[in-house]
Length: 169
Image 1 (cartoon, one colour):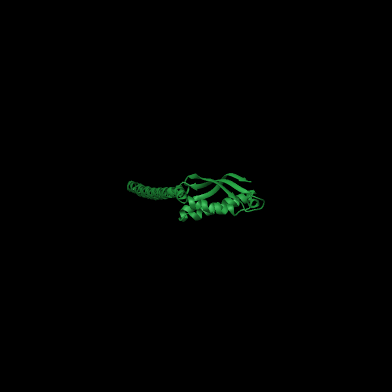
Image 2: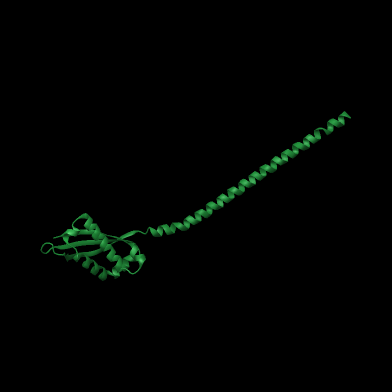
């Protein structure tokens, strides 16, 4: 009888050890499956984020179009009288984005030149002699060029007007 008691006693211990090992294996498999699922979800989210940022890249590049410069002929105008016979001779360059605005400026050149001549001839030498006066004049000329263009998109493509020469006599 003692042999049968000893023989049966180790059997339940062995079965309990197998149950614990099986439970640990099932838990490990569940942890690995959860980790793999989370890793897969993270990977696919990153891929979706990369696709979205690739779609945004052309938009960002579209906003940062290269800049070009359009030279305008030299303007010579009589200024409003302060002293006798003062005149202004100014060279201008339009800084613009490299879009169809360049062709539109060329098409509208007579209107643009007329607007600029009218603006320049309305000034007094004292108004445009200082740096602040020149900057204000540049802004006003930029506005005149923009007003000559029909499309708002093209108007936005005109960045500023630069002076390449500026002589008051």
